[in-house]
Image (cartoon, rainbow, N blue to C red):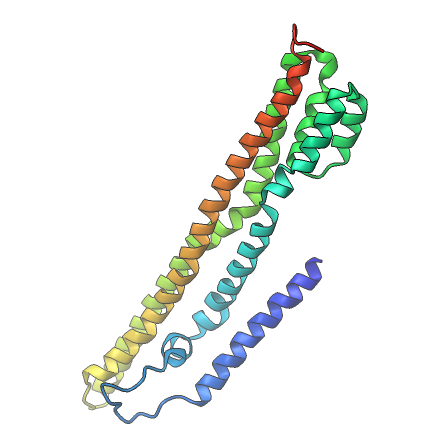
Length: 249
């Protein structure tokens, strides 16, 4: 599965680089364009943004999109708090089949199944121990999910820095080109400086384009994990209420 995902990611990167190459071959001529001419967006935002965009930012944008899709599929109620699992465990509890409920929960891959299994595993130690086990299991599984989505937070934080690095590099090269022209006795103009600045800002554009959806998705997924984990804990504690001293069996 991982190998297949890597192959798809690699193919997407090569497609992006191929589009860059095609656009490079079709660069607009140096003749001044009309003020009302159509803007060549592919050239301005991709081709002219340089190698940092081609080989770092564009692959990162593809990776962010793939991760968002993957986590959107993973972090769903049906995977964390499935109604079928809750109904089955509740039915076994009503029938006093606690051992069968524990075995069923141990084979269930959802967070609810793991939490219920941890609680039932501590049944011999009393109701308080069961509740503690439920809380600890829910926290542990939440941390695992949060660690998985942390990659979005990392990408969202480093992408603007990569863009800023490209901006600084582009500005240095742009001004150095002007210095060389002056040293050779040439005359500089605003168009030459503007072209260099446009190249430099292209990397910043891509840095923000990658960072904004990455950080937004990370915040949403983190909140989603916390909400579903709380609901799974509450559902498990409600099931464990049957073991509460004085509760009707």
